[in-house]
Image (cartoon, rainbow, N blue to C red):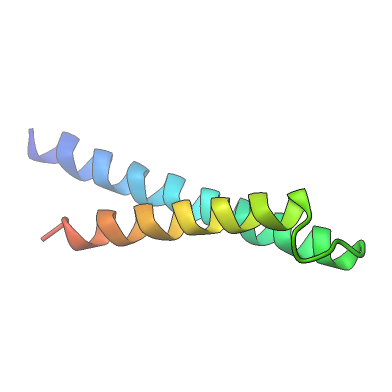
Length: 64
């Protein structure tokens, strides 16, 4: 069971990093194309970035 737990934690961290990367990419693309502060792309980018960062924080915090 320990190997399955380690695999689950690793995959959970990987998905958190992917979600965080999507959020940053959405922000960069939106701002590069002239999106405003309250445009949908910026809001979605911030949401994805926050969710990914929060998930990564919780995954690394509870791994001990």
